[in-house]
Image (cartoon, rainbow, N blue to C red; front, side, top):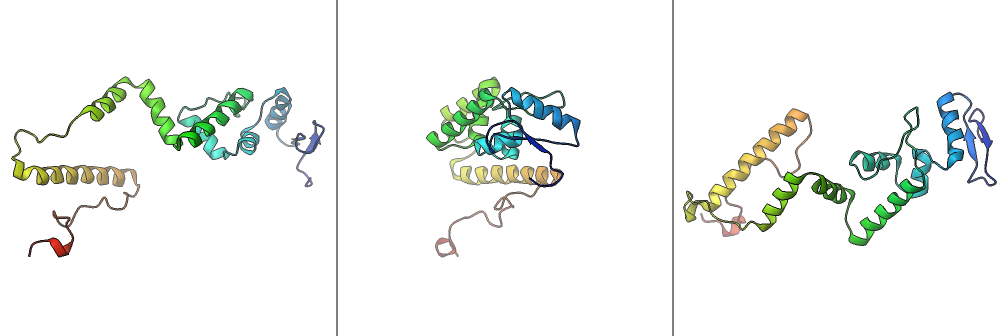
Length: 182
């Protein structure tokens, strides 16, 4: 143990020992609470393999709700650890990511979003009645250009870069040069 780090107490092995900090009363009280079967975010991260940053993200998107100490520290007990373990198993079993599960949670809680997604899946592409068949491709390309312009303006307003490939097209025809008409 490094000098000034604190005093080791509790537990019968080095891995179960706790460090009682000497300088911060909140941390000392939290350490005492840890004797009641809860872990700090850093201990939970070490136990689960998720980083503290990822644990915060998992909580932010609503997949887990870690209770807080009186001082606001996240506390992870056996129920939270089980949820994290089964979440990892779900992700691995179905080869999905946290965003996928987060979106599934949103679908469960936001009825208009759920309906919109269902309608999109059930919709069949159809040319608008007021667009001639010969102009449908150009009409769709123009719609995409407008969407990309709006996305670029929003990203610029937020100060975030746009994804590569979202800049306005130079040409309407995307066929390789070798097949384009001269």
